[in-house]
Image (cartoon, rainbow, N blue to C red; front, side, top):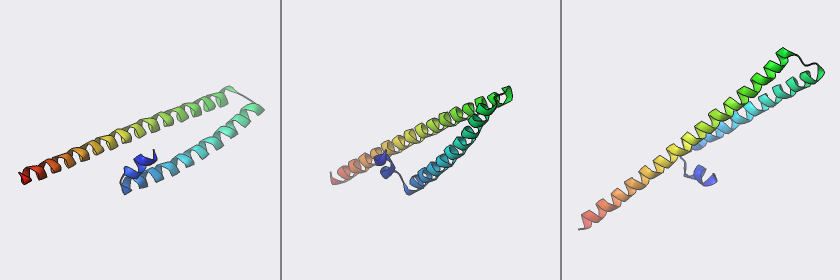
Length: 101
């Protein structure tokens, strides 16, 4: 992962930092809400509270799925960019060799 970050542009590195901070905020907020809901359910559970807890779990899994998909997409785009850059470098080297001939 660190090598991938080093290979990325400054803009992408900044995006990763912002994304990490947003993830931390999300997890902190989610944990706070989860702890309160669990405390309430231990005190007195009811159908409405159980539905809220279930919905919070669905939100968490949805968020994780979106994050995984985005991270995978960013990785694929990064690989495509690296492939393109390698192809450009090979083409430039070939052009230089042709000029020598």
